[in-house]
Figure 1: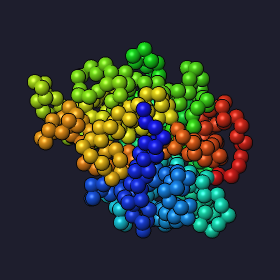
Figure 2 (figure 1 turned 180 degrees about the vertical axis):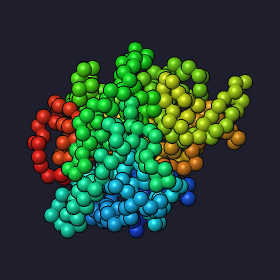
Figure 3 (figure 1 turned 90 degrees about the vertical axis):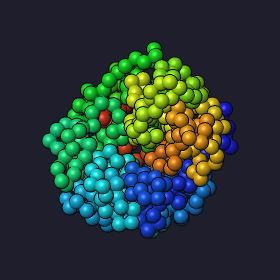
Figure 4 (figure 1 turned 30 degrees about the horizontal axis):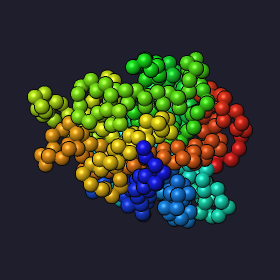
Length: 436
């Protein structure tokens, strides 16, 4: 089983990504370690959330973390907002991927509503943590407030009730909406809590009508196949013991739901219906992530189809034998009794040797490696969106630091209440208070 010293090492190595894969001039965090990847706004939000953890764990000083945070917030406040295709953002939202040097939009990507929400969540975490009466920390709080207030959540509804996935200057709003249980839980909470352009409460209720409650391997839960959808919103919000109307009706809460989803992952790997290599009680973790590529290979007399980036999930797939160690670690608060021994098992594999930032993003032992590695294909890079949940969910398991910070954020409290959440820790929070 993974002990405290191993968790220390895994957490510290994962945080180093944000020290070395960030542009110090603007705070933009690179999407991957490929060397040519642009910045990811979601990775920036997760990095902002990781800085308080790093301070509390002694990885960097409070002054260093505050300086990095302020650089980031100043960049976003001063960056170009407008409908032009080379802007950084529009209507308070930001493009999914940005040039790591200039901050301009790249790849004709979308103005992403959910990735913007993750960015804002990181900003609000910074505002909650940097609470000292010093000029740097005061400016952090002021900028986080202004950046959050600028987001026009109502515009992102595009005349509908639920929120769209995004917008492009070339063609307007994308045809997809955040419907069905997914990582948009934090998006709706932040949208509902906005002090300037709040989503109507009916938006959240409409979203909840698209949920699918399923029973898989005798476990009943609010279904989403990829494991990350049961984790990402929980990086910031402590859903233990608080319930909205949907969960009250099921006698559950979103934290317990994530626990059940984690247990289903393990059960799927133990059953291993497609016969993938290494799947088992202590080897699982199927989520949205990179894989070997869009390829077909003969493996042991079977024709196997492999994928590149896919939202892999259980039990319906897609699944090609790709395992994500970070996806296991991010479930640590929900089911430590199965996650800790799985972490220990995956650590012992080392996947061909030590790596600068710890666990590689993914590996696929079913995919034949030309060099004969028992681990098969191993991802050649690390990814910011994968490194941060390692840092943050280990911390939430150990100290609840991020959860505690956001419990005191009036915007999060307001958003949860507007969504109909009651009970638990929410009952003790005053209706108004400082945003940080």
